Length: 154
Ligand SMILES: [Zn+2]
Image (cartoon, rainbow, N blue to C red; front, side, top):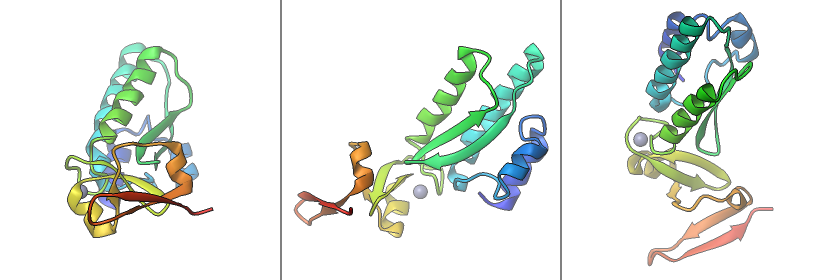
C-alpha cells in the first residue's frame, strides 16, 4: 500500500494501529491500494465498537493471503468482531487488489490474487473461479480453446 493511504489509516485510527503495529509491520499494510476502502471501512466499524464498548481492541496484522484480505486483532471479544473481519474478507474476494474495481481470484504460477480482468492481464494472471488450496502447488496452463491443463510445480 502506498505511503499516502498508509498514513491516512494510521492518522485516522491511531488506537487501532498503534506503535506496536508499526513496529511489527514496517511496510505498513501488505496489500495493494485497491483494498484501501475495505480496510478503511473495517477500521471505522472497529473504531466505532471501541468507542461504544470501551473494549481495547487493536490490529496486529493486515495482509493479502491467497487473494484474500486477512486482518488479525489482538483478541476477539465478540462474534460481532469476527463477523466484521469476515465481511471485509468477503468484499476483498470480489475487489481488485490493485485498482479497487470488481475482481475475481486469479492465478499466476503459484500466486493467487484477486484482480479485475485488466489488471490480471497486465500482470499475466489467469482468472480462476474455482479456488482450491491445491492450486498453490499447481500451475494452470490455459489454451486458446479454453481448455486448461494443470502442471505440478513441485
Ligand atoms: Zn484492477
